[in-house]
Length: 113
Image: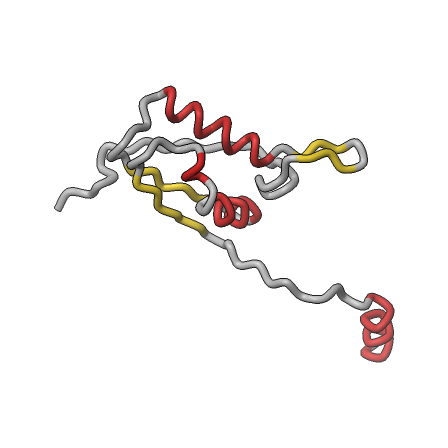
């Protein structure tokens, strides 16, 4: 058995963009540039020879997995045509829950003690 990834390379981006690699804006003087980071890394992979027929396994861990999940639908904009893109996400789940009512939570904590 020969894996399609047997001659693969691993690129680890040891950087937290503070926006799960999804932003591209300034908020109250803080710069969030996650999407630019992903585009820059992708451009570097192309410079290194990423081309049609290659397999790119794109993923992330923790909040980075959320960002990777979003980018799996956007990377086609910057990848060469014919690159086979696969996602490998360790924790992409995001639940859109209402904000916690801290007053109610505090009252419940007091009742329990």
